[in-house]
Amino acid sequence: EEAGLPVVSLPLETGVWAASNPDEDPGPLEDVRRQLSDRFDLSVEMGRACEPGMVRRILECDDFDVPRAASDSLSAGCWPGRMAAAALLAPRVLFPDEMVELLANIYVDFDIESIRAMEAARTVARCRAALAGRSRVAIEDLRAVLPMVLRHRVEVATLANVLRYVDALQEKSASGRSVGAVMPGCGGAPQGTRPGCDGGGG
Image 1 (cartoon, helix red, strand yellow):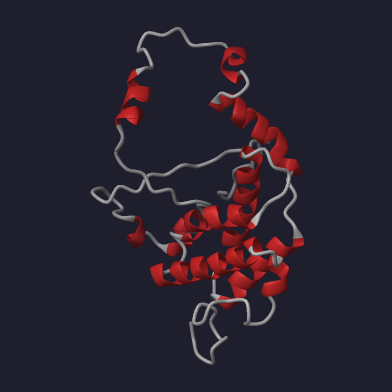
Image 2 (cartoon, helix red, strand yellow; image 1 turned 30 degrees about the vertical axis):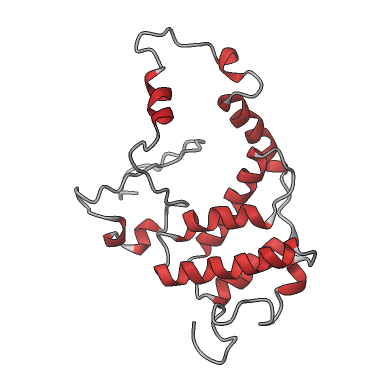
């Protein structure tokens, strides 16, 4: 907003994608200010195609193909069709109380500075469940998205401790105990992975 200029509001939903090329300005993601990188929900590591099948799928797209109509690309089972179905399901995916409690514990116990990280984890976990056709978030959804959510927000050691903690909870959940039953207090976390639980720092 500049003094003397009217404020214009547009009802738009936008998304911003940014690439961090270590060989170009502003350099690797680690050198970008945390206050800036925190504005991005996810950090996705990209690399060159490492399997012939990946390259083949790229080359199978004819340079001179006539663009298909939207209805042609939304057939059942194809990737665009899955995305469309997931987009309709995602707003209805339940994020259960035990998952809320898990995120709250991670935020407090591991000194996560950004509440945006927890909000992003909740949103992306719901999207992952929707892509799988499920109407309820499970702990494996959070385990899958936390590296992308936290990689650009916390130190490597902190991320490793968070993932070990979630892995321990996931193992207990798989053995028949609910996540909520092992989270309160310090008994549910592996030794040394929850700050303050062993009498020392994290």
